[in-house]
Image 1 (spheres, each protein chain N blue to C red):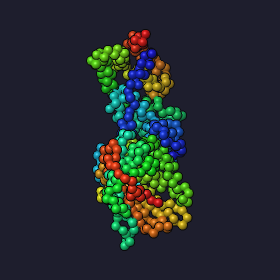
Image 2: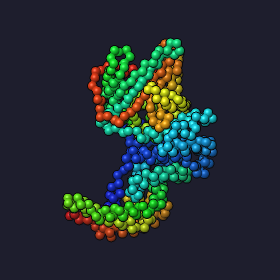
Image 3: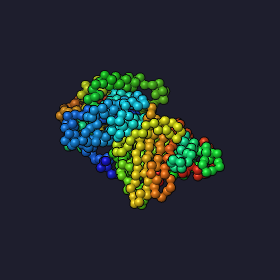
Image 4: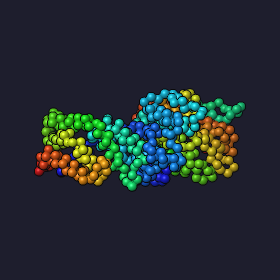
Length: 347
Length: 204
């Protein structure tokens, strides 16, 4: 062994950085992309290509800087994102970038554990005089990190059943996404969007519906948020960063989760185009805390009913309050079907 | 949206092929800045290890973030004939490390001191092999701390896996200069290690 080999061993003693450490550094770098000044060569190239850089446009740089510092100080409404003069997409991007930074501090379960979540779901049917009283369900769920164990759900009330408390076990494979599976997905925004598009495209096959790429990407993000209560930190940051690139996303202020918690939502309308308008129109929302920008819920509203149903509007939302990961379900129980219809997915 | 169409599931994030070689990614990032994140995903682990070895892990976080932000700002000047961005990134990292020379030397001296004063449990366990390895490590750290900065840069870049030509590119000096600095640094190391590795002696 010569001196260079000894030196290589010496260098190799430094362990590679863990994903959490690297994710934190990555978030700082990505947040700096918008605020970084352009060199003259880049500015020339942009002018030639006609592509404006956000950092070159008036107050946008200030907003980008606000995103960059949000890791340290996150305040409600900071940056005045509610100004009507700012493009809606930019406003949504600011919320999503803040959510990306907040996602980095999500709790990380062990692979042998379950993710424990407190869940409230509100289902509303009908509008106007035909509106029904919303069904509100509260419960707890234990979701397997690897997806190899059944998901256990315990509800304190079940519409249509006499049981005061009922338990449902969803077998592995019921959900499309698992925590462990998400950790393997790409974190570069363009690659992640490509994956989401391909993943969601399959759901339209055979339906005769045509859905735009942006709609499919947004629907896939919504599906992930439905399936997995807590996202892996690095993936969560990547997901919201990628979501900020999807056109047509807007901010809805002063929303309320199913549990009555105030939030700020980013939303997109999905309107599958098919023969005889059989697919309806939906708005899928991701809801964040207006203070910490952590994900606190999701909501799906049916803005226009499909022709094949009589309902004029159906809204469901799901509130997720996560606790430190538990080692496993602490309840036993019998199988019941009361929870299986509660995933607020359109169609 | 990106040209990448290779299914990424099951592929480690750092190895996700998202848009071709480094030059293609950097070129694409001029129009779509977010693409530069893929450069981070590919090279940040190695750059972090390199910086952490020289400045310690906590300082490395700050320096690595700065490396990629500086690279991002300068990407307009990147020579797109170079498919591999590693020499460029290592060069930026080395320049930033120079601002922290004192911290680096302090760290190396601390390693050398720790090796000169082995923990009691090592002696109690009579793990001679580990002690020998620790002595080598201490000697190495001591020499590294005493080396002139440019020689240390060359030595550590080569030890990190760059060839002489890539190291020259990273440092912006002729390859002949790199070769002579490397030779001088290796001579110093060999002298410190007594021309032989004590671990090898134990094997005999």
